Image (tube, rainbow, N blue to C red; front, side, top):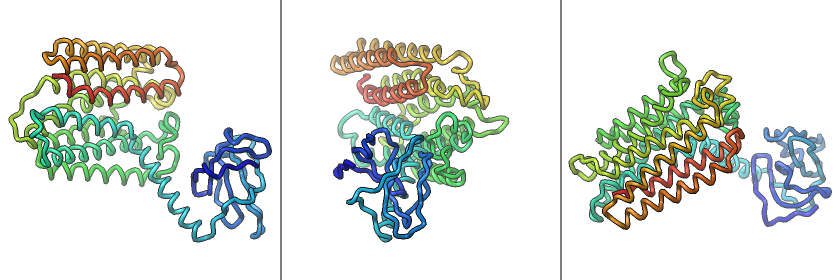
Length: 399
């Protein structure tokens, strides 16, 4: 056996190590994981492998290496210098790994791409009311952090609630999510959702900002109406209502409510909607519509089975894909025209070339994407979120 000790990664409570090398002339690149075990530290095989471990009954059995894979699993005597922890180290290691696994599941439960979008958008919008460097003060940062935390907590409530009511659908569409995979129980998911909802409203009420609290209330109502399985709710079953929920929050509530919160309740100025915030609201109406349409393209299989009438089911995946591309090109073209009309040459140049570059990258990526391949379309969907993030870096330059 060839064993490179310099690179291994402990992966689960089963003392799993991943490293380059060979066992019996077989490359480890094709293996899902490697398992080092003895009878005294045997644990149930990780659910990602269907291989069978041989568990000797003798307490003095020698450690061995198990290379687990969906098929053709092999077991080999362990290498001589393999580290088999004693009971105390074993317990500490297991506790640490369990904590890491739970943290990883929690991150997936929070849908990090949406959380990142919320953080970037609120920071960007918070900068728009600034008129001079003197406006950047401790009060400004405190006001922004209050808005940021309450919005992120509400974001987690919304995406978590959706997973609670979509467990069966996610087993088909998104089996890596912790509720669908069984890593979290429904009770755990519900506890997380309730906790973050309470924390979000607590911060909103304590802030004393009506726009901030209004934004949280609207997000709470639309997020609940989108997901909860009730005759008058579960708006995600209807394509137009589903898109409207996402667009209302991402395009209108985020831009206007948080801008007014910073302008009136943090900087203590009268409300005056500026060109950048009006541009951001208009631009994000198109972009949010694209996100609402695009997110259903890779989920056609599960949505069809469970009666979710998305545009991708009605129109077909390819038509919705190119509709989204055209909407984004319309948004970028409008932004370029606004940049050309800017009185500030520097800001206008950044606006024109920035949006031109994003449009070019979008076009090249779209050409190489297979709209009928789930992996390809899912990758492209995450690329659209990156374009979403990038836009908020350009919005402050629109003057």
